[in-house]
Each structure stands twice: as C-alpha cells, then as structure tokens.
Amino acid sequence: MEKGIKAALFDFDGVIVDTEPLYDIYWNEAAERYGLGIPHFADHIKGTTLPDMMAQYFGDRSEAFKRQVVEDCVAFEDQMDFPPVPGVIKFIQLLKANHVTTGLVTSSERRKMKRALELLGIESLFDTIVTAGRVTRGKPDPMCYQLAAHDLDRLPSECLVFEDSLNGIRSATAAGAQVIGVSTSLPADTLRPLVSAVIPDFSRLTFQDYQIWSK
Image (cartoon, rainbow, N blue to C red; front, side, top):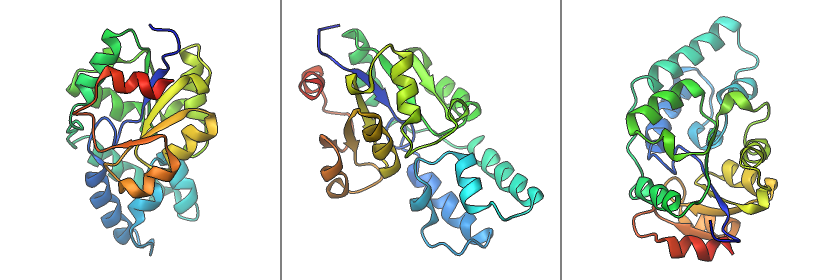
C-alpha cells in the first residue's frame, strides 16, 4: 500500500446496503405498535445497537415484552433484502486491488451480518469485522471504530470512515478518524458540516478520490 494511504472502514446499513428505508418503515410502525409515543422513531435510533435501543426505550417494560420486541426484529431481519448501495462493492474491490486494508463496522448483530455477507458474497473483502457483539458501548461511543483500527494495527487517525448516520459520524469522529458522509439516509446539507466530504453513493468514485481523501 502506498505510504500515507489510510485504512478504509465502512458502516453497513446505509453505506454498503440501502436498507435504511426498510428499517424506517419497520421501526416507525413498531413504535406505534409498542405504544412508544415517539414520532419518527427510526430517526432516533439510527446507528444504535439493539441492546442499547432496548435499554434506552424499553427499559421499563416487562422481560416478556422486551423478548417479543427482539424476536419481532430478528424475524424481520431474517427475511429482509440487502440491496447494495450503487458502486460500493466495486469500490471496495478497487481498494483491495490497491492493497488498502478494510474493515466493516456495524451496530448490527453477527447473526444478521452472517446472512447478509453470504448473500452479497463480500465477507472476504474485509480484513476485520466489528459487530454489535464485540462492543459494550454502541455508537455514538467511539469504541467500535477504536476496535476496528486496533484490529488493523492502525490508529483511528489512520483510518477513513464511510458513514451515513449522525450517531455513526459522531462515533468515528470521537475515535479520531476522518469521515466521508454517504447521503443515503440524511440530506447532504445535514452531513456536510460534520464530515470531510459527502457522496451520494460510490458509483463514480476512483482510487484517486480515495488517495485525495487519505492525505
């Protein structure tokens, strides 16, 4: 790898796959069904692990109720599709062809990720994978990105992160990483003040773009 080129860390939902609209529909409907009384509930939990969400929003419910919420979510994820964000797989392949180390950092559970990565055929593209089960403090805490950087024998400042959610951007920034915003979930104008650059997807990116961002 060329000296000075940063490792690449990718969030999953909203960055590698365009699943956020599916989650928006599911969690907004679920919030009504569970009587949370929180409008646009999906916006509040983007980038949040399921255990953190359960603790914050369902901590006062019975254990049976909480089990049902988790079981409902698992059932949804076990049948959901994983449409790739345009150009992302080719872009990661391009990085690997240029000897860039890569990592996947997601708030999702390993169970879901095993199915998703097998369906997409992309598990071999990542040098490390950090899922919810490896962290005790989810996004916006920096722990997940610190773990990924450590796995790759890098400092977080030596990593370039691709994120779509505010919690994810806050997590990567707090870790000390440079962030590229992907405007699949939020408007570009919302992301722009918080990141180094904003992209709508990966369809037009070149390795030269990555080199510029890395320096």
